[in-house]
Length: 284
Image (tube, rainbow, N blue to C red; front, side, top):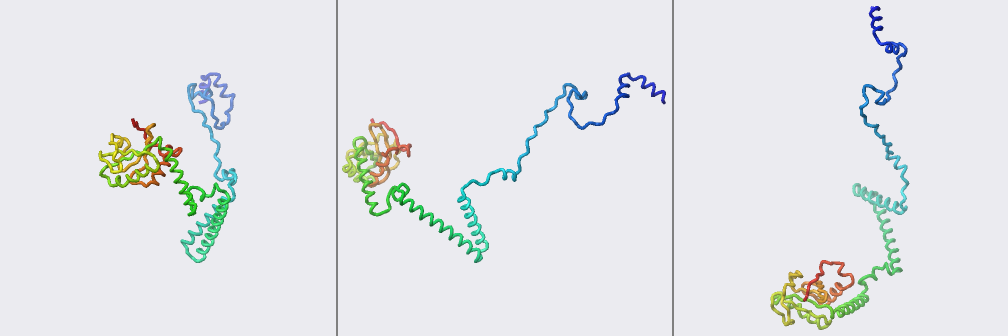
């Protein structure tokens, strides 16, 4: 057996025998990823994905709360939210457990809130009295009876002046039917309106018949279809020079309504409010 072992060692290459005898076995190294050219089993053409990037750990919710600065809102807002929350809680408790103590506690807190709101109302009222721009009683139609009379008189005078200024440039188209009772009832109002303010009324018969107040009229040549007149009586304010036509109203209107509506549609910037109502039609 010994002779056989000696024969095998003699058959091995000298370098192998020397390396096996001269180098003692090294201890196992920790698992370290070696380069591909140091590992003959992987070869030169082996491909490996790069090491993934390790994202930094996200801070916990508690750490985020600590890093966040304290509530920077005004203390009044915090106090109001706390009061609102406490009032709701007291009410809910009193509803579920309507004992005398629970109901009393809720009513006392509610009375405190009402007193605070009343105090705010008093302060706001005094601020409005001392600041005309904030006094709503001075904006629009007043509330005092004597002031209402003055306001209505001023409004009527202003509207009369605005309609009078239109007499040379505008006319009123009056669409009617000879068999329409409402048209017959509305015709005297338009006739008086023309005589008082000087603006010309252009009666247009949809069915070809006339009215006693307007024996001279025009027959409909298709303009009612262009203006989408589906109901009579109908009144439109027209500017023949530009072809601009704006609806004033349908049905029987009073003289004050005519004045108000004409003044409204001719005020500066009125076209921007409802631009789809104004049309451009050739009146040649």
